[in-house]
Amino acid sequence: MLATGVMAFALLQSLVIPVLPTIQETLGATQADVTWVLTAYLLSASIFTPIVGRLGDMTGKKRMFVVALAALAIGCLLAALATSLWVMIAARIIQGIGGGVLPLGFGIVRDEFPEDKVPGAISALASMAAAGTGVGLILAGPIVELLGPSWLFWFPLIVLVVAATGAHFVVPESKARSEGRINWVAALLLSGWLVALLLPVSRAAEWGWGSPIVLGLLAVAAVLAVLWVVVESRARYPLVDMRMMRTKAVWATNLVALLFGVSMYAAFAFLPQFLQTSPENGYGFGASVTESGLMLLPQTVTAFVLGLVAGRLGQRFGSKNVLIVGTVLSMTGYLLFALAHDDRWEIYLISAIMGAGFGVAFSSMANLIVAAVPHEQTGVASGMNANIRTIGGSIGSALMAGVVTAHMGPNGLPREAGYVNGFLLLTGALVLAALAAILIPAVRRDPVTHEEPNVALRHPEAALVAGGTLVGDDPE
Image (tube, rainbow, N blue to C red; front, top):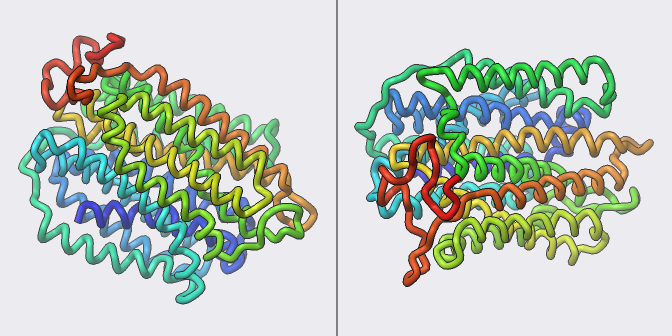
């Protein structure tokens, strides 16, 4: 039931992406506006994930897991009935509350599984999330063509009802409870700086990067972000534990996650549109929604397969090294797309390379986070890593929209240069991700088995020393 819930959440992240042009036409929206169908979902998830996670620690993880699935279901119902863009965006915001299924799922695994099974179970949930995202890209076309756009939400609604019912009756309620309360000031500041950042980034092409409103909103975002960090640092019950975040292994891995989020979600949002554009515009393949999903199928396959073997590779070569390889693979795929996208075989090859990088990197990040924190922080730390990736996705999709729509042609479609510049920008983000991965402290491996010892799980008291430092090859 945990895997089903996580899969449904991932499906809703990606099902709408290949059909954004269809939604744009159906609801009478502009291309810049319709990207908020994705951005609003990611933004909402970024805000509600720590809130729902905190409520789970206080009132029961199973209870809040079911509540998160219910929020996803209600959002699906509203989206299926939406007749305007603003209703659709409101529905997607409600669905974002369901982002809490990831930290709640990690927390339930931590509470209910034997200690030696926790890392593998968390990696499995992370792999299901990645696989669900890819499956959504493939299923979107057939669902729309056979059943209609509204079934993009009716179908997940059915899955969510089954998952919520099953979770209620099957998943045990954890007896663990933590004291605390919701830091609403921190939540308000978090939402404030994210909105103040994403709005000008997505509208800069229309308003102008040097316009007073863009510069003013960016300044507001910077001020609110600083205030948010200060409030969280001083709070007795923070939404985001800044002390844990200062641990080198944690902040370096989270920085990689942020940059991966920037690149991954932005690519998911614009690759289908590129593939569906008619070649008469000088690029694209005129693919149908189904065809564009099939062209991205290699990405889903390689992400799933390599995600499953990434744990073994990490045991043999070290999760940090495997993460670096995954980042370089993803970076190579993005660069190739910017430089070579004229033939279908190129798209299939590039899609496979991207997926391989995603699958390896995501599983490695999950294992690195688990190894970096003590047992009682496994769920929180893993959830924050996923949440930071979502924040990166919010920024990346808005930034990509600004770059692509800055190169609009007379026919109302982006020029090829918009996509090229956008993917070069995302390549740069992954270059930074590779550099950040190098900063992650290495963990010693057993000289006989070549396995990484799970420092946090085997010796909780040794995982963190004074000041929150990972014990490993790099004492910082």
